[in-house]
Image (cartoon, rainbow, N blue to C red):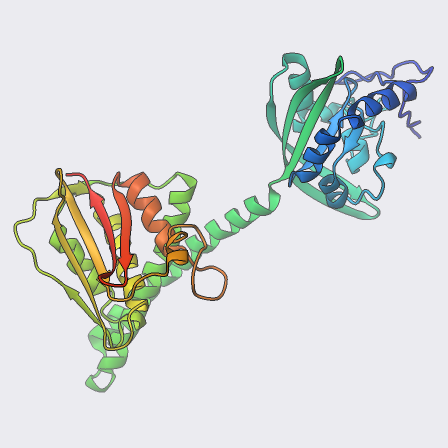
Length: 390
């Protein structure tokens, strides 16, 4: 059985397969801790961060851990981890594979945490690496995907290594699951759309309305799934833009047609004001239609039954280009207007809302190079606009 030496008091340094095995003595560790805790502001800053943070000495031994670290990894008393190295404190299955402890086993040569700490200590730079940490807790094995960020801090002649640990595993698993889900469900919906077309073509007269309704609903579901995928790509920076000459009036008509049978348009009128002779603009028609559909949906939702929403396109003034506008009668409350383009902000209850206006701004400005905005007051109602260059 490997003897686990935490401090370097009177002990010869163990052999190592990777990082230096030398450890500071207990007195040296305690002196370094005292030098750090004399800075109450630094301690407060550590506890204010939302990530797990460790403060290490040159020998990679823990001096201080913040509250998030203790809660995340089940540490009930910070004194229990003082003098340990990160893998030893967190329960890494390789931490004591060699007598030198964390950092000295062959497996440690590919550990992002050790690599980040060593590189930061050698260069003085802030270094970020990925660490796939496998932890043993009793008879249970846990896997953590961590983003590790190491930097150097000098206080009173001593140099400390600050290590931030962020668990990126849940977000990565969510993204992977979402990609698989969207891919599989898109294939299923595509098959349903094709089937609905066949049914509509061969359905007897008494089933004509039902078959057409099925076709409309499958198309709508297909589009909503596509909208979700496009928003994900836009946020991730992977959205591809395919620009071509666009007829301003035609995209308005296309957007309005997509909402013709939508529940938000029931008992409400969506009026597209004609305007001939508008010059073409070069843009991604599919993305522009999505933005206009969102504008129209929001306007229809804000309009009482029997009301009217108007949409039109006109030349930009001043300057070249085109402006598309969607108007509704109801004004937006000033406090709501301040947050209208924030992600997840919505006046409607429930989670998962507030993406429509956010996506309009994101796609319209970052990807189409336009300007998305709105005006609203009690006299003239609310008008959302997108302006695109020629």
